Length: 317
Image 1: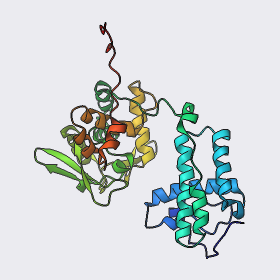
Image 2: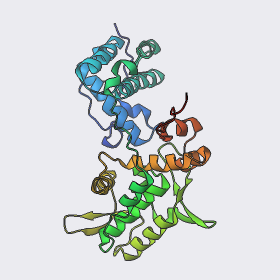
Image 3: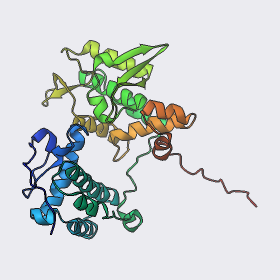
Image 4: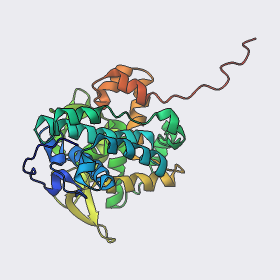
């Protein structure tokens, strides 16, 4: 029988838990409040809610064998990638460890969950998308960034946004929340102050002179005041708003111009990879600093996307 320590449920709020549990659990992802960002807690809650729905009742939910069966279910009955499956399993195990720390379950229960291994990437390698990373070459990036019609107000904004993404390496969430006072002149160039998903303090990210020029033109022409650099347009009539663009809106802008340039399935993060890859070609340390990675290995593993040079083995014998 699973050992449960009965305590009152922690307070649930839509902003921190994200998803509603299918069964009445003695705890939820709000246990992680103060340890993770609200967006991360919401993801933990979605994963935990999916596990709870599979378990069906609280007794099964707190039985480690259920997690093992869920792992098998995700591997056999879904087309999820091994990385996604392992992330979901890890979320449940993390919550169980925290539940034990806070006295909702015993440490023996948490240890039993920790003992459940994830799926093997090699066993599900066919589910890993080949097009997860889209390589953008400099010529293609120039075509994309020159595409917006700058005689229109929305085109001025889009030109500024694309140039910023292509020269700063900002994540989509960082671009969406970029404020005017975060743009600074430094030496003979420009930087933006960024506080990323795991940052406590602001860090500096590069900004090209071209991007800075586009931003200044956009802000000078924008008829509304806003502390945010990239603001939204409402409705089909291009009504300018003072509110910041959403991450979804930035995705749409990127897809619009990359599709016009003949590139399929490009994501805003591929602009970040473009910056990292171009910088890493000459100086890996510069790429690490620009992207805000804590570890150089992260930059080397994910942002050196150079392909094998054709003809390397010609004339070997």
